[in-house]
Length: 68
Image (cartoon, rainbow, N blue to C red; front, side, top):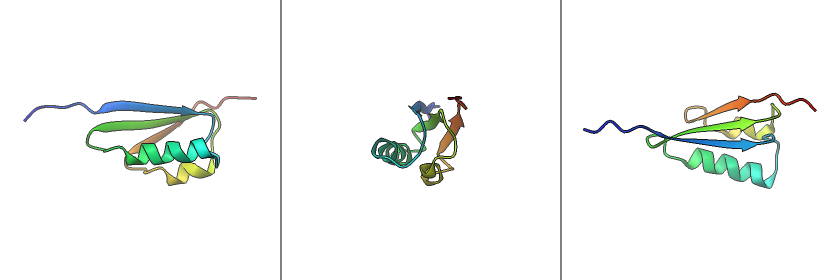
């Protein structure tokens, strides 16, 4: 048995407010295999509506808390 490390993938976006790019980001992040990938999303602004759609078992969300 080989010891395989997960491939880390980080998506960076302004927020997870409803929009085309954000919806695609959620689909991409949720579609990655948890066995092969360690997915994270970094946002500048918190509390976007789409954050609730990210799989909490496989995708971590971090907020940079950017101020205007």
